[in-house]
Length: 257
Image 1 (tube, rainbow, N blue to C red):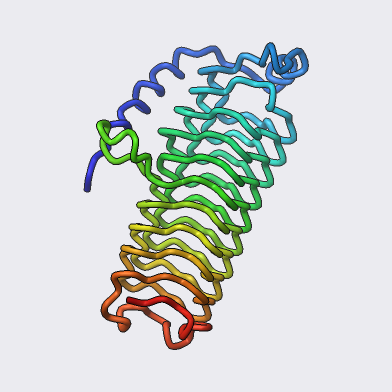
Image 2: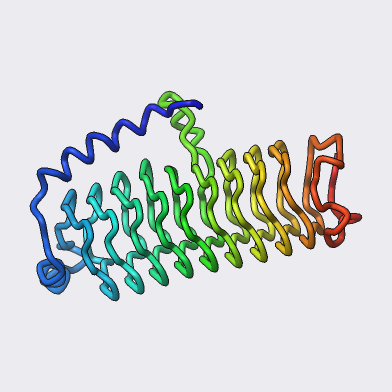
């Protein structure tokens, strides 16, 4: 397994968060109430673990580098925030607004992002085993950061993620790791999946019309019932590797070469 050099930054962040002052919900609410765009609520590098912060508006807050593990942000508004280097494992973002957020160098493993709005968001980090069922990732940019290759390949790890019923239309997942991801009934129309590892992924009943799967790894990937209108499978020489292809829709309109 390749080790990415930027993950050690997270270890440093854990140490920093351990020294940060603890806060409770009322303290967070007070800072949010006093904040505005010019003077954001200072929650930077704060330890906010295990708090119930649901239904709060964080748009005027600075949460950069904060430790948010296991906290509840359900139904909250975090749109447009910079959450780079935050610690987000097992956090609850169900029904939260995370549109246009930046989440870079972060571990979001086993988090609940079901029904969350992640449209136009930017993500590079680890989100393995997260729940993104029915989430909106339309126009999301979760592809590899090819401008920072001096630091090693920086990409999204989305192995075993639940994308059931999610909207991933026009999203970019260039070179992401999506092994055993569940895309059942998801909308991936015009999505970019260039060079993605989709080993064992399930696209049953998904809409892949216009999606680009050029150079993907498709070992034991299931396409039964998927709409393949205009789906590009460049580089696929052996159609037999595409599991469930005979049971897919509009396979005659797919681009397989």
